[in-house]
Length: 184
Image 1 (cartoon, rainbow, N blue to C red):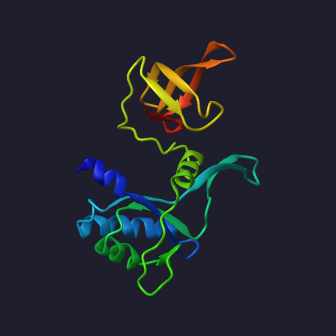
Image 2: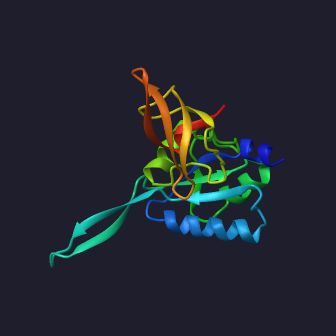
């Protein structure tokens, strides 16, 4: 059952009024709880990055800048009930990829999600994914894409692995993120 839920989960993009992204996130999270939708709607993200600005007095100030103004990401299972709850959240003007008239939207592609989450420092990796020492994994992204590697060290807290990969006829140590490898 848990595996079926993981496969049914998809990421969708909500369109909002620019400047209201965090309010939409807050509204949606409250509705998820109050309408008992935790089994259908999982995460709500406003993609933003921290930047350092220098104030007029010369002091450094950290500000958050939205990567996609006017958009919010939501991870959910697209059921009629979940669609209705999200679509009717105050501040949501619609789903990106929906053609209107109640049609269901198109989810983001896995590569798009991985790139967005990685840029946010989330990495998009599954923190529940378990690796074992000496396990052979396939690298699916990055400089070692397409290679096989044997797990030498595991840093589950940061979602990183150290693998030995064969390059130029000898074994080399490579550090990769969880989201850059797949199990066989």
